[in-house]
Image (cartoon, rainbow, N blue to C red):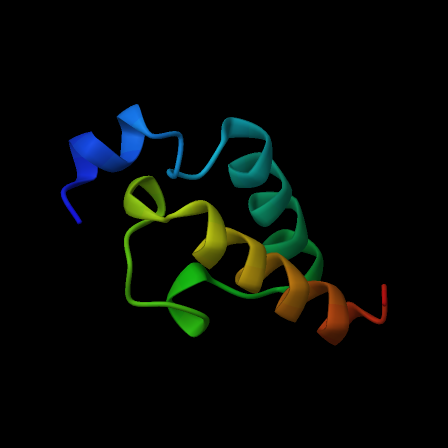
Amino acid sequence: MDKDLMEELGLMVTDSQLDYIDTLLDQAGGVLEDYTDTPLEELSKDEASDIIDELKGELGYD
């Protein structure tokens, strides 16, 4: 799906998700590339949610 269309439909990652991913990556000592090949600004909400869930699991937040 086209990125512009995804933005219009509200399917792109939110700023709060980006901030949370950054925080979790800092806590885990990881980098985004460990979890996805997609650039941060091109993540969908679903991809961001999956990364957040994975990081939370690694940090024992589940």
